[in-house]
Every structure is written in C-alpha cells, then in structure tokens.
Amino acid sequence: MPSQTPKSARRSRGPRDDRGVTLNAITTAARGSFAENGWAGTTMRAVAKSAGVDSALVHYYFDSKEQLLDASTMPPAEWVVALQEIPSVPLRERGEAILRRVIWAWTRPEIRDVLRSILLTAAHEQRTRQKLRGFFAATLLPAVAGQFDEPERNLRASLVAAQVSGVIMIRWIWEIEPLASVTDEQLVALIAPTLQRYLSGRLTERS
Amino acid sequence: MPSQTPKSARRSRGPRDDRGVTLNAITTAARGSFAENGWAGTTMRAVAKSAGVDSALVHYYFDSKEQLLDASTMPPAEWVVALQEIPSVPLRERGEAILRRVIWAWTRPEIRDVLRSILLTAAHEQRTRQKLRGFFAATLLPAVAGQFDEPERNLRASLVAAQVSGVIMIRWIWEIEPLASVTDEQLVALIAPTLQRYLSGRLTERS
Image (cartoon, rainbow over the protein chains, first blue to last red):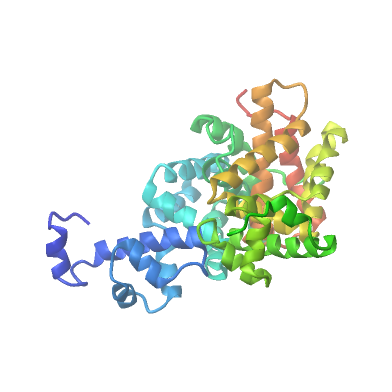
C-alpha cells in the first residue's frame, strides 16, 4: 500500500483507512507464527504483539484463529496467475515451466513466505493440509497430459507435487548441499526431466 | 538447578529400568513438541508436563534445551543399520532398496516418529538442519554409484534426498492423494526409477 502518511497520522484514522497496512502486518506475523510455532503454539495475542498492534485489532479483523490462519495462508494472486499459464505451455515443456515458476516464486519474498508457511503449517494442521491438497489439485492437475483418465491424471499430479516439494524442502527449507546452491539452470536440467516423466512419460518400467 | 552434586554421580543412582522409561517418556514428549511447536515454542517445563514427570527431572537428565533436542532427534539404531546395508545391494537395485527401507521405517512408530520430528524440526532449527545434512550425506552418499567423482556423487545424493523427502512429505506428512494411499508396490514402481536415475543414470538430457 503506497502511502506517505506518517504512521502516527494513519493510526489516528482508525482501522478502516489503515486496513491494508494493518491487515498485512497481522497476516505476516501470523504466517511466521503458524509456520514456526504451529497451530497450537500460535495465539491471537502473540500475533498482535509481533505485528505491533493492539490485540483488540486482531479480533476486530478476525473472529477466530481459523479465520486468521485462512487469511495468512492465502496463495498470492501473482502465484496463482503464474500457475494458470502452465496448461497453455506445450506439453513437453511443462515440467520445466512448473519448475521455473517455483524458482521465480522463491525470488519473491511476498510469494515465498506464504508458500513456505503453507508447507510448514500443513505438517501440523488439518485445515491448511486441506488447503494444500486443493491447491495441488487445482494447479498441477491441469498441467498433466490430457490423454490420461482421471485416476491416472490425479496420480501424475501428486507425483509432480512430490518431486517439486522435495526440491523446495532440500534447496530452500533445509538447505541441503549441493542442491541448495546449484544454479537455477542446473536445477532445471536435473529436475525437469523427472517432472516431465510424471506429467506425460511412461510411469513405471514394468507397465 | 541448585546442587553441588556432579550430574554423573546423580545419574548413577536409581534402578536402570526406571531411568530408561523416564528418559523415553521425556524424549518422546520433547520430539513431539519440537516437531509441533518448533524450537522457540518448546520449553523444558512443557515437555516435563507432557511427559508426566516433574520439571526438575528433565533438568536432572538434560543440562539444556540443546541437549534435549539432540537426544530426541537421534536417528534410531535400527534405521541406521537398515541404511548401512544399502551399499551392499547391487547398484541397479539401490533406488528400490532405499525406498523400501523408508516404507518399512514408516511402519515402525519408534523410527517414524523420530524421522518425522527431525524433518519438521529441521525446517525451523539450525542445529537439527545440520544433523539432517550430515545424516543425508552419511547414508545416501555411499549408495551412489562409485564411478562418479566426488562433486557428482554429492549432487546425486542430494537429488535422491529431494525425491525421497518429497515422497515422505506428500504420502505421510501432508497426506496428499492419491500418493498417500497407493500400495507400497505401486509406490516402488513409480518412484524407484527416478531414484535409480539419480543414483546411477544419466542426470540431464543435455549432457
């Protein structure tokens, strides 16, 4: 939110005018807390403190911790748009296209932080896990070659999810070398063939 | 803890069996807390409460939270032994051998819970991340075909780690369908060829 107004002046105008800035501070703090401390370890009060706002303000915007979680794990619109382009990429290039979008997302803190938070929170919390499931289905399923029947398309989408998630964990979350520091081009050359096999190739050597 | 008695002396008191049971209760509780609430969200007091022991007893066994973390994220001996067998498996079967050991580990709560805790804690906590790095290197590196030079062997080991971790996250941690419920045999047929490519196959289509 572009604003030159000093903080003190903005504060005096009350919640509605300040909505974007305040909401952003709250959801950013909540995202960090859900990812680091889990669902049980996150309180509305601690989120308020970390966002530098009064606890009443968090309750003003969010009726419940569930609502706060939903708002802080909303995939950024830019990321959703980037993934929606994938089905229009030629089939044989989609493995690479998916990976390049993930690499791009990790250069953008406002996308990366939300994705990181979704992945980490989903390990503990059923509601975010459900969101992650829906999100994988909605974004990866349309990338799979259309010639397969529905069960196989679903299977292929979850295989892509398995390889992409593993790369995210190793390269950016756990930072395991050398995969954490190969160039983006090397990463694409190494991983895209696997994604491509899952999207459109022969799945098993026995079938 | 205000006491002049050396810990080693205090530790030697009391029946051995009690010690094992109590220690196990404490490390189990700690493991759950580190994984669910992260490093910052875990206190010795909360661990004691969850283990059903007096808080003084946790301090009796562990001087610090670091020590408690180390003890609760120690890979089970059975798991280390299972992985040590891999280099003696014929090279072309090692991808499958690794995956079958992971599948087996997830049928054993005492192994699975530690591995799960290491993976989740490593997302937040530098000390566990370091342990995870060492562990991947020690167990996956010897599985890679010996004909490659060291940088390539390291790269291949981290690629195996990326695929194995992704499968663990999708199948057992986030439980994304259908990969969460395919049979073990299907999982092996789908994933082992990828692992095998990373272990001994051609890495990129361009090289």
